[in-house]
Length: 279
Image (tube, rainbow, N blue to C red):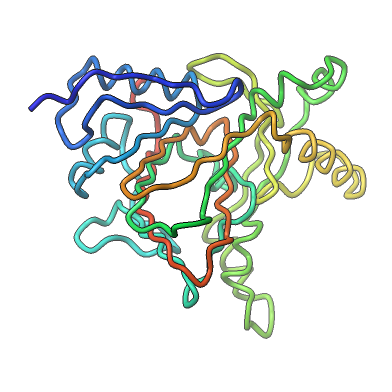
């Protein structure tokens, strides 16, 4: 059985494309793998429907992009598959990714990409949104662009503080968490290593402070950038169906998983790819 022939349908002018015509449970071959990779670079997030893939297929797909991330420090993994994170949410395990973010920018080298497979989805709600940080950069006035290019920002645990602070009597757990996971300083403006497009590199989840500014000035600038970035023209919204797959370039996007489906349940399996094998 062959993998098929790839078709690409662009979803918005800024970001997102749905790919069809191929079966990801079959070996793809070098040419098809390259077509999928190129679509990811161009569209920043790509989607597939009705893909009945096994955990082994999921891992094989991830390895065409690069090395899968080791077990996640917070979320559980699928039995016998330590690289596959299980994101199972519902009334007894409330969702915690309903905020705009780029994954783990508190690390010096955040991961390249993620591959998310829908195993159980509600009939209504539970959509995920992505937005393009390169489109957001390109829509800024030139004068503001020039001011931003020399700036850097501090990123830390952000919302993940809740995992270590809730129910604690003092701050020791947070101190230990910061020591374990660390902080990072990143340029406010980066250049994509493949597409060479510039993009804004701040996010509401983890960016805490603009280096060299007073807190009030830093907060004012970050608030302006967040409002500018978070415009519908920069976004794509994906309605999940069973066995749908999303792959996104974590370097130049934000994402937001809506938490509007309770008391229904949602189960997603995710593999994060550490670095881009092609660069």
